[in-house]
Length: 202
Image (cartoon, rainbow, N blue to C red; front, side, top):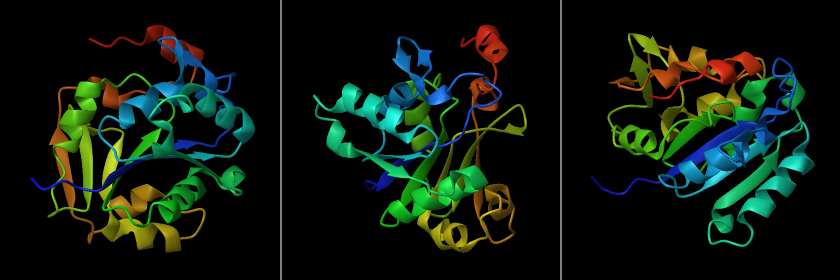
């Protein structure tokens, strides 16, 4: 398969109210969530764009500290969503505008730092130009992250700020590819402290 222009989009703009701590800066395997995910995404993506909002300066400082001395830093970009308080869809819109020259976007939440590099490589291998949307499924349930094509960019950017990506995904015109995978963790995320305590990755 020809090389595709795939870029990562990581959303880290919210308040993390249910967690009680600011999720992007919480540690997983001795690194902040935001750093752990970014490093893994860079194994399969040309670049990673991180959309910030709440505590954007703290995220920027953390990313610079983690990447500035290495060769990966030029491939990481931070952008601020001034409308982050209106919901996650506005952060998605901000990121897609920044990545308008991409062919594909791997769209990732900040509360899934646990996926392994093997997962990302298998997931990206599912990209197929006959589709607009690639989503992992386990046991009949759709999970995250997802990959979507530039054919959906304009629909996302031009939609109302209170819209949902799910509505675009479920539109009859969106050509979806389902990847039946062996990773039940696609159905999980870290929203509360008990989620972390109960988590197991076999």
